[in-house]
Image (cartoon, rainbow, N blue to C red; front, side, top):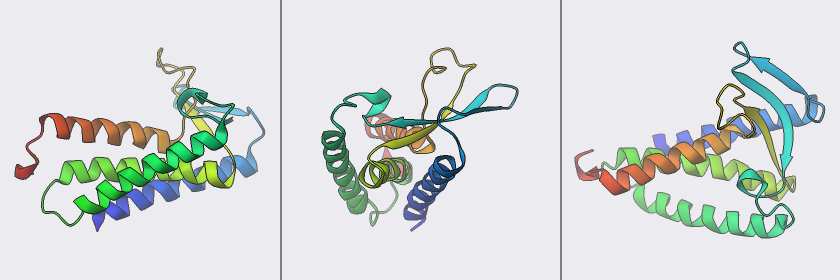
Amino acid sequence: MIFVIIAGLIFISDILLKNQIEKQWKDSEERTYFKGKLKVTKQYNKGACLNLMEDYPKAVLVVSGILLGAVLMGFALLLPKKRNYFLKTGLAMLVGGAGSNVYDRAVRGYVVDYLTLPKVKMLKKIVFNIGDFFIFLGSILAALVSAFGKESRW
């Protein structure tokens, strides 16, 4: 049950942040925090990661929905099994993050992105959201566990 709660908290927190940014921020408005290490802005992404396929938002929605459905099925099949805690955690992160972005695509027609890390050289031009962060983190965790973990021990 805790893994469903993790997914739900990620989904809800990202949606709430997106709603607040959408309603209260002007387009491309920027604010910096933590001595310039974190920048919050408002940008729209009609495509996939890094605006890939932005001219085909419906195709991105369909593909994203299918991929989310596949991950959800795997997550649902894994939940009742004993152990596998790290894999369940990774999939919970993935489901929560992907769910919020698919929801955005379905309801708004685009994903609201709002975070950037200007002090990190390779990330300073990338604007993302909490959902994206957890998609990345959950994917890495699930991949590492699948490749190297002995989940039966965990």
